[in-house]
Structures are given as C-alpha cells and as structure tokens.
Image (cartoon, rainbow, N blue to C red):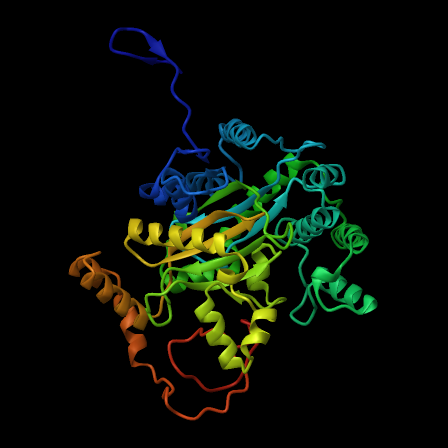
Length: 459
C-alpha cells in the first residue's frame, strides 16, 4: 500500500532488508549489528570493512530465523529476491557463476548466533557441485583429484546435515564413514589423502546410492535446490538437541535465533601450498600472550577438528615444545610435523599481522579461522576466544596493565560463574605423572570416575 508523504506524493513502502552482503572492499554491516547478523556475519562484515582478505558472501539475518519458526518453517516473501541479488553480487566479484558447467562458483553455508556456540550447529561446504559442475572445477584447478575430493565431501556433508542420513542407533557407525573405512581396508591404505581420483569418484557414487537406499530420495543435482536445502538445514539446526542443551547451559535465549552466512568457498585442499587452520591470539588455557593454534596442509576446515589427521602447530616454538613432550627429535619433527611458520613463512607472517590487527581492533583475545589457498591467506572467522577462568583473569589483567582496556571492562570480562572454576581441585604441576594419553582439556579441574564416550550415557 502506498505511503502518503508530506508534499502529497506517494511512494511504495520499502521491503524489509533480510540479506547483508560483504566482501569486495565493502560490507553492509559491522560488528555493532551482532544481534541481527550473528557473531560470524557481523565479524566477517567488520573484517571486510577493515580491508582484511575475506571471501565475499552474504548473511541472512536472525530475523529470518524468527520468522521461520513463527510461521511454520517458511521464509519472508522478500527473501528469495534478496538472496538472488546477494548471489549475483558474489558472482560479479569472483567472476564465476553459481551452477555454471565451465566456471562454477562454490559456496559454504554456515550458522552464526549472536554469541559463540562452537560446534553446536551445522555447516555445509563445497555447495554447488554435481556431475557437470565438477568438470568445471577440474578445468579451473587442473586437478581432478581435488575436484572429486570436494565432491565426495559435499555429498557426505549434505547427506548428513541436510538430508539427515545419520546412524540409526548409538552403536551404528556413521554410514558414510563406514563406506570410507571399508574402501581403505580393501585398498590397504590408512589416510583419506591416499585415495585416487577413481576411488573418490566411486565414493561419490556409493554415497549417493546409500542416500537413495536408506532415505528413498535422490541426491539433489540442482545447485539452487542445494542452496535452499542448506539454508533450511542451518536454520533447523538452531533447535537440534546439541544447540538446545548448550543454550540452556549458557543461558542463551531461544528467541535470539541464528543467522546464516553464505560465502564463497576457498580451498585448503587444492595442493601442498594450501592449508586450513585455527589460531588464537593468546593461549586461552593459560592466558599467555602468544599466538598459537593448529593447521593441516592440503585439508578443509572440518579435517582440523575431525580427528582423522593430527594437526600441526602454527608456530615453530609450539611445534618444538610438542615434539619434546612427545619424545621426537628435531630432525624427526622437521620432517613429520613442521610448523606453519616453517612450511609457509609468508602465509604465517600474514596471519601474524592479521592476528595483531584483530586483537588491537577488538581489544580482546581472538579465535580465528583461516584458509591458505595457493599461498594466499583468507580469513573465515574471528570471534572472542572462549577461555578458562585462569586465562580470563590473566588476559584481563595484562590488557589493563598494557592500557588496552580499563579496570571496569576487565571486571566485566570475567563472568561471576567462572570464578567457581578456580575452586576446582587440580593436579599438582610438579607431581610425577604416569600419562597414558594426551588430549585437549574440557574441564576446569582434575576429575575421576567412569569413562563415557556418548553424551547420552552419563545422563
């Protein structure tokens, strides 16, 4: 309905904005729009505004998530056109076309709540692949193995996250991983990286077959159908059991919703001059002021946390420290576990500079995700790093002493509930220990009791 203006003229009401673009030197949003764009979308826009290397993309706002759940899992009428406009902008920046047989654009689709909920919601990578567009990726990269590695990862991830092919019981193995492990055993290999092009082609076919047999549906080949399926799955993951439980523990209101970020894919698995990793501007366990993190050469993001390959340290000092703890000599370390600082010194230097820029800009320790494609570093995310109480106290005090924040801000950086962690019993650091395994700390103190490898059993 037209709206009357003061001079008697009329104009149509403006459509509500639901999609916010970023990249190519511009961004519709910034970090102050955290509630609307979610932490991921707001920080990607902020980094793009700072001139940092961010793959172009768009963020669908949390308001769409609210509409989705209050209107029978449907979208606002304006959304389709706004997504198409945002997609066209990405295509123009990248010089590629979504769904093209000769020059395809591939996308990632990720969640992003206004507060960090790591690992709680779903992600889809390499979206846009089918039997035709994979040939275009081969033409672009000149690397058939890379193209089919992306394709099998996409079918596996989409089949799990979007189509819902998961183990039917606690004892059943993941159906996709079962196929992979059986193929490895048949070929007498141990690592995914040892699969040939023909192996990966066979995996794509076998993954699609198990989806058809178990779910009675065909894997979608239309890239636009894939995109909307992934968007719906990410909004749907806001109410998955992991996310609901996490929100209860962290006192996160359910009505906040999540945003969805659709972004150009960059590839850490294109060859040995590529990598993917996570970095922290400070040690989030101890608070020590030192860049640290993990990376993998020739890998995609999920490989770093999947447990299928052992990540390497990004700094030389940390690599040597881990080698010493594991009983490896320096020559062995250099050959088997070189740091990013040694392996890709230019990429490491860029990462170090960006880490300093981000911590200075946000005035807080950052948790960073990055990918290096053919020697070029891309930033995929930054957020305030989750830290132990010990680290929170040290970081806050150090930043006050350095004049970065004031005392009031420092006090607010440590939640009252965190102080309880300081009262937990801990192991004497000087005690003699008979260590049987090494892992990442998930508890503020020392614990004893039964071991459970399912989150359901302890309850």
